[in-house]
Every structure is written in structure tokens, then in C-alpha cells.
Length: 255
Image 1 (cartoon, rainbow, N blue to C red):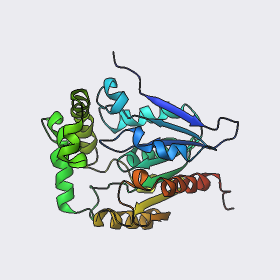
Image 2 (spheres, one colour):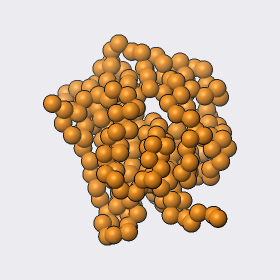
Image 3 (tube, rainbow, N blue to C red):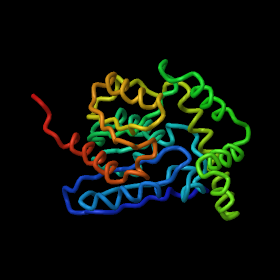
Image 4 (spheres, rainbow, N blue to C red):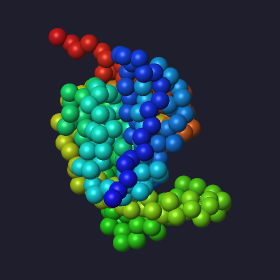
């Protein structure tokens, strides 16, 4: 029997308070978004560890995007919400908006990865495919964390923490495999959308964010001096990105 996902709700619970669901990326946990939650006391902020990550690792690795989508809709619990997602989490936000536009008022997508699109660099696409086809997910998990933390950071982790990070590799492999081919059509995204990116992020992600905004016809939110992990390094600006996404969902519809 699998365990339920780890879900946290914080902030303003009065009727009518904006509801925001935060979705973390690959090889990450909701904990990385905690400084954003602290900066939104007037919102009801729902965050969760996605299946296979962090406190939800015992729920088992995901079978694919369809299960991730079901999880997100369960977390929303029938409440009209703005979904703000980081990186890989953007796929779930888009899928939820396409499946339930009656519940998703708007989406904020921070540097959504699009390796299936022709302007994504071939080498980056091959890296996604290599991870997605790996036969050793635990090695993938360890290697991913080593690249983020460095050798000293990895060595400072406890044995239990290292084991958990290796176990997260199973979800990471499934996540990467699920974005090799197009998981949705951007034309089906009909709710208001805001795309954010850091001025100092990877060049291909910088370009992709701009090109996607043009394709979708949505505004962009740029954070100067920020990289892909702006939610960690620039929490004030990222919280403003969330507020802007929420405002899009509450704006009156033009006649």
C-alpha cells in the first residue's frame, strides 16, 4: 500500500482569499518554495512534495504525467486556484489547466522546459533522453544531487539523506522520459498565463521562455540577476511573480 502525498496548506483561510498551488520541479521538494510561502500571508498557499520526492517518496515513483496530474487535481480538491510551477512542474500546471479550466484560474510557469520543441538545443535534448532511459535510477539520483550540491555538499549529507536522494532518482527518470515527446499542445492552454525567467539563466532556457510567451501570447516576468533557481535566490521577486499570476486569474474578462 502506498502512502498519501505530503501536502501543506498555509496562509489566509478566510472565504474569498486567493488560493495558490505551488508545484516544484524535478529533483526538488516543496521545501525549496518555503520562502515564497512566507511572503504570501494574504493567500492560501498549498504546496506538496510530488510523488516520488521528499516526504512523498514512500508514495512510490510516478507512472507518468497522467498520475502526476491526478495528484495535482487531488491536491486542489475542487477549489478554484492559480497554479504556479517551477521548471518541470510547469507540465502539470499546463495539463491541469487544459483538463480543468473551470478550476484553474491562471498559471504561472517559471522557465518551463520544452525539449520536444525544435528550438531546444540538441545536446540538452539528448541529456533528457539519456536520463529518461537510464537503467540505474539511484545512480541518476545521486549524480543529480552531486551536481547541485557539489562533492562537499554530498559528503555532508547523512546516510539516510543520501539514500532518500538516490530513491528520488526513480521519479526523476520517469519525469525526464515524459517530456521527450510533446505531452500536450500549447494551443489547448486557454487560461491566463504568465511565463517567468531569470536574466542570468541558461541561454537556451532564456530564449525558450521568450519564444513560448510569443507562441502562447502571454506576458513575461523577468528577474534581473536571477538564474533557474530564482525561487531560492530571489524569493521577494518570485513571490511577486506569484502575485502577478494570481492577478491574471482575477482580472475581468474583456467583452
